[in-house]
Length: 202
Image (cartoon, rainbow, N blue to C red):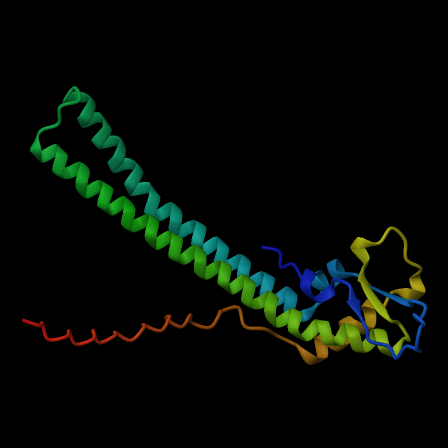
């Protein structure tokens, strides 16, 4: 499962004091986001862990689906034998199967959502750290704009700051968490007390 760091290495415009009525010449630095994602220490470890989570999810999905498939085929055979008029017992089996199928789907949807939140959490941690590093390194090189190498048609090797960014990223972010914080339940709105009715006139 590949983690995309587009938010961190998208074009970063660095504020530069400008003279009145003048726009300074742009000096560009280039960052190879693909290389960051493949060589960053935290990225490699996180990708391995997220891949393991994805594999575990797929395995569990198959384990839950297999008995449902077998049961569904048996029910279909029974329905065919009943020539479309299942008796009460068969109808009860069908309803029980549908309930079980719905429960399995809900369980898998929840696990898939958790996996997606973990991916987003990893991306957020890396992006929050990589963005300022890219800006700092670019400024140190005298650049006013940092671009992702993948969005450029040509970039001279001298404009590439990936090595410096990678070194600092590994130093400042040796690892990340691959388990997203638990979602907080939305606050329940306070119940409003109905206004007392007016006394009825005679």
